Length: 375
Image (cartoon, rainbow, N blue to C red):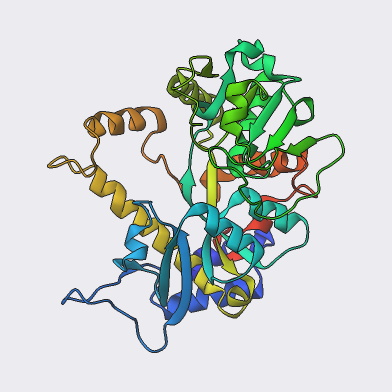
């Protein structure tokens, strides 16, 4: 952002001393654009002595963050000491401790903590994980469930009530089918492995009916046995495909999800990026620099996927899928920043409050570093 464009925002009343410090920091860095992280000999670029050294953790299987993990892309003025971690372990660690300066984090967990006065982290509007979730609602056909509305009054399992996947699944059940969270008996536990630990405990309102399954039990087994009527989750239960009476609620879920996007404009955000508050307060420019690096990494990988010479990943109809994605989403199907995600983020903050997770309704801007508000 130029100084002249910054001046034009003065009338909006949101320009603060921190904002100006960030602009000056960006100018001194040659703007907050990203740079390559390797030198001509292919050796890792550890930056200049004045570069900010930050520990960084993210989920280990994304193409869109790979350039940040391997150092091909680095934030201007920052060296990320990167570490890849599995999502379950990472999100528990980030929720309970502050081991990493910059980290990927569950958006739902972040909103819960923020609403309850835990301000250890400041959000950055890069969203490395997004996923439609209609395809991950599974039912026991013997429970008399023939349509989504039949879930009211039923027993539904899930890994954790607080996960972002579950937040979105409850949201579309309410918005599209009129089923509120307090109309269901919820059971938490391991999907295919028993005794999965909670990320952290959240006290729920009295009208939310929530319990944990027994030691040694799994949601998959309980669904197959009919002790649960349905379950929502991040992936498939083991009983699906083995037991004929276990089915998807939305068999043609791709068509349902395309329709959902066309109606709402929502491609559900799962995870965001956070920076420790102490780091941000000392180096406010770092938030925008990190956002720019995530954008560069994403753009690099999307361009790689679109290369028609050879398939960039082992999917036979990759090019056909990309053409369909462009037809549905237009030119940008995975936007970072606040402006293109404003309505979606508003619905997330409202849903978190409605479902008893957030202690108050959060404003979108209070989630994110001020230096990223204009993105």
